[in-house]
Length: 469
Ligand code: UD1
Ligand code: MG
View 1 (tube, rainbow, N blue to C red):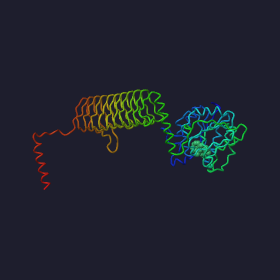
View 2 (cartoon, rainbow, N blue to C red; view 1 turned 120 degrees about the horizontal axis):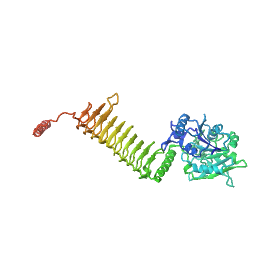
View 3 (cartoon, protein in one colour; view 1 turned 60 degrees about the horizontal axis):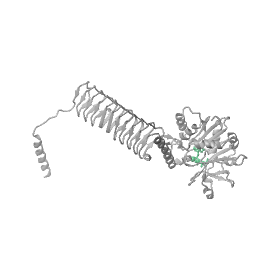
View 4 (cartoon, protein in one colour; view 1 turned 120 degrees about the vertical axis):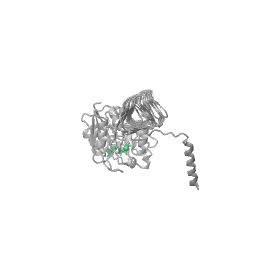
């Protein structure tokens, strides 16, 4: 829409968050809060989106530019936070003269969808102001919408300025407006700060518009998607609503989610058909899961790529890693960053991997630390094996060829290489390279003393008897 500009008010301090972090940089479903309304605004294809920034502006600008690199975003600075009316005034110099309609949203309303905005734009043609309103059960701290005896909107009263009588009004202002920019330019200078907060209220513009011959247009919509986030309780509620939407999208797209309300799927997660997700799982960041894979109960995956038909048994914790098709992981496995688990490889319970490549078919099934390693195809890492990758100063690599067998309870002291097909005896401490096809035994030779067990018991019993006396 070439004649449409959107302004997003995002300069406020967010005092009620009680935080050193600016409000709009708080995460909601895996994305900074302030990115949500911007995404919705861009869905309307406006000629320009002017974001008013002030408190925490550098962080917010950076986040928005990174998220929407090619979008027609412009930033307008508001040095002092003198209120929503002042914020919009700061945006006006950046609104192109060709703009016929100016849609205004608040940066702290992450749930807004394009639909009510499109409808408001249709209603607002040729009016100085069109605004959304909602009737709610509990009007909380929202501005109240006052109408005259003919039902026309005449004014908005902020909660803090409202008398007990006016606070009973249950029609509230979601703070979504469409302005005629030319009219707004002439009106906005008339705002005054004579109110409870000593601020220039954008809401006062509504009264100015109501006094014109063309008046105020309004559109009543359900409030659920229009809630603002002003404190952490509201953030938690808004996030839950976003997560619910995301879960619903994937359910409808062919993903099975058990006990959906316990599952966290962040906004940038991508899932294919016939993925199955167990209760309490959390898929975070840019995690992707290919068709037919299953993610067990309680798994926590951040920035992980899971391949087709892979099986993650319960309680796998994985970060910045990839899991190949048909691989089997867990239960209780820990994949730390840069673990690359190949096709049909196995990582079993109480195994920790880090910066390690496990080639297709490799296995580490029980109780192992596999750090800074390269494990060849079909190689088996026995129970209790430790890759000793750290000498207190640097990290070193352990390289195992293909079809290697590492017996249980072995230590591989890196840097060390074991050649293809070699065999490491259980309980070995390997400090030197093992050539392909060799057997390495690095432990004390076993001593067997026939019949000695009886003698040993007698000796120990006598000692215990002496100690009792
Ligand atoms: C505002 C409305 C209220 C409405 C509610 C809906 C006013 C005076 N009140 O109240 O009627 O019911 O939204 O959520 O408009 N901001 C700036 N610069 C400022 C002040 C605020 O950019 O100087 C931005 C904030 O970052 C925020 C938005 O404007 O994104 C709204 O500000 P906020 O302080 O949250 O207003 P509310 O008290 O929620
Ligand atoms: Mg607010």
